[in-house]
Length: 110
Length: 116
Image 1: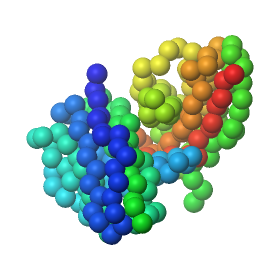
Image 2: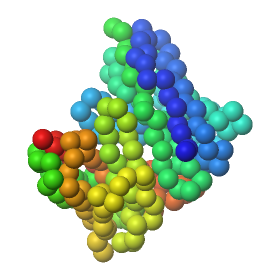
Image 3: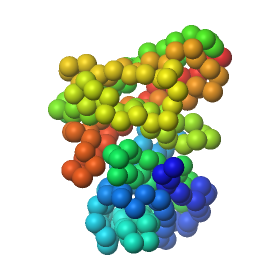
């Protein structure tokens, strides 16, 4: 059973600090990795995608991928109250199925 | 450009009934996938359609089915509803769904199904 694991949280981070969200996956053949943000009662929206080892930065967000260790992380710099949401890690496995983690609830403390 | 549109947004059904949910993908997107989201299980993949063919399927019973039309619009059907089918059903579309092509998956707002 291919799995994507995330700490469910809640992760509480002071406003202005760096929030670090982590995700591990079991399928070594996975090639595509995504982070989605989901506000309560809303559908997921794409934050970042990453396909190769290393870091990818987009504004306040940085995605990090380490295929050897099978983990992907998301850093949010200068955290804002509007960043409070559930963050879903998603992985496309070698058989083209997208598998989501159960999400990490992030709470930014004003 | 219009996003992914799902109808209906909210519905209540009784056990044993069946339900059909509809999804219109973003214009130009040919891959449509469906997901069930519940507090306990998170977001789970149901199936994916591409060019009117089911290309991938998750681990759900046969009561869950879907189809895609020539205009890429998709429907999913759940027969013989059970209380545990109460969930948010999300539809997502992408250009072609390929894992190595950098396809981005865009979600609709979802259909909230309550089974009583």
